[in-house]
Length: 255
Image (cartoon, rainbow, N blue to C red):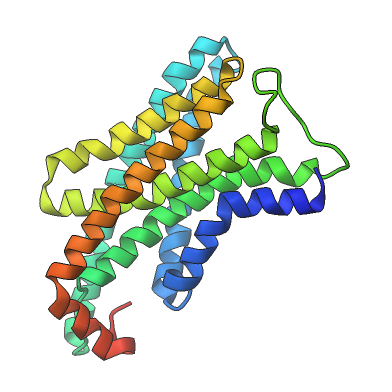
């Protein structure tokens, strides 16, 4: 894999994360800390899964099924715990804002926090499963595996990293909205879509499966983005007064 190829693969997997970081996160130190904290929480969940499955791996192919179910279950439990921590932080920020006569968190602030939280999960996933694969593989050739002779392994990893980056980022927006409003459909949508995308990665193990597995995983990400986009649209369009107030105060926002 050449340097140009490696850079291209990295941009496929992490390009949207860089764009979101520059346009939404970088100007607000609190959101930067949120991204870092969220990434740390995702790594903790991965460590917990590794400890749990260390005695059973490597194993037969069928062990990937209970492994993926366990991983998704632990990560969704971590998401709920993260939500509980967020509620405490939100209460603290609103209380602090009231003391110093600053505006409390409004709809756009909460959406940005949700995006930053999901982005931390997504970046951690892409760095761990894609970037860590690319960095030691620079050289004059590329690499294919027997089950996917149509696409280089690094391209598959880049697209899968992109899919889960988008899935994690916008799933957090849906989850925050669902948990705040007690919306049961969206509360189920997030773990179900996460599980579906994870199980679809097993399609890549079949002969030529990457041709179908990669697009199906990306479709899961696009559906998640569409649902999150509708939530953001509804929140910002119905709360135009709050949005206008946030735009007027600029640096006075709690973030």
